[in-house]
Image 1 (tube, one colour):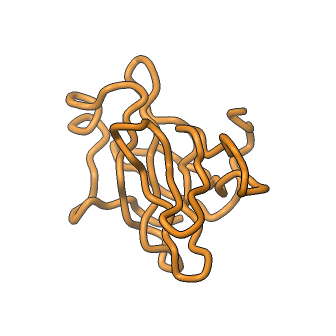
Image 2 (cartoon, rainbow, N blue to C red):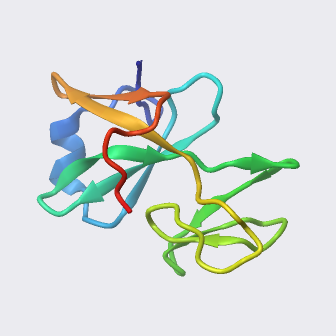
Length: 118
């Protein structure tokens, strides 16, 4: 379990005071990944999962705010806000990791969430 950061540790209360549902929040935390995306749900509240954009052949899948999708800059694969493949060429959804909110902090856990959001 590693604390999620956006340059500094993220306080849940401060984040949720300004966060909007369906907006993805870019964070760092797990040492073997460069970034992950927190999901803000209605409430607002932080989802129990985060999306880890895959890196394939040097390409990092990035969130496109205007299109409301993740897009692979190398192959054109597209994914929705839950990391699910929209059209081909991708064959798999983006990987999910677990998120634990504890004592006003957000922790990232490198394992699949207990509940699949799809």
